[in-house]
Image (cartoon, rainbow, N blue to C red):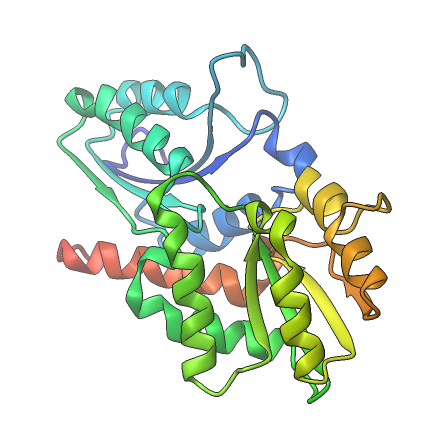
Length: 263
């Protein structure tokens, strides 16, 4: 496709200084799928830059991509954020887009997955399919957590699990790890013996390898092991799972259909 002839573009936005080196290669998988399915659209990956970032050897920064799209005569943008929550990273993305709004006729932004109520069914079903559980086992998803009010969506996902007969699925966040005694007591009372720890994160980085699965005594793995559970860790981000990638793509298609554009 001649990108200079396309008037519509899709931006797959993630976070991080060098996303490819931190396990964010799922962005490239999404890019490939979208280019195949939506051939009338130019598709670009981008990451949110931080104040200290000057260069990236991985994915390009969002503000640079937006400038390039303007020069390529793109007029309409569809933004597919790969954040689970509309938290601080999402707000930073929105601000960057607002700063460049004057360059485009239209910018459409998909809702992050955990903030989209219609996604709770597909997400919970997908996760239960990927990680089936036995009666004496608990699946514990570890999210990042945030001072932002959007952290409430972690609780809503756990509630959705429990209200839909997935009572052995739990959602914790990093800021909960220092006060985990009641959670451990509840698991013992329920007769749980085995725990699988799974990142509720799109990519696996420091928080997965250090805070969740680290060998130091304060990691979630060590704390639960010391409490008498047999613990296994999944060390891959959710973004690598094709079934999760499809949910993201479905969200984008919903946004495109809202604007009555031809696929």
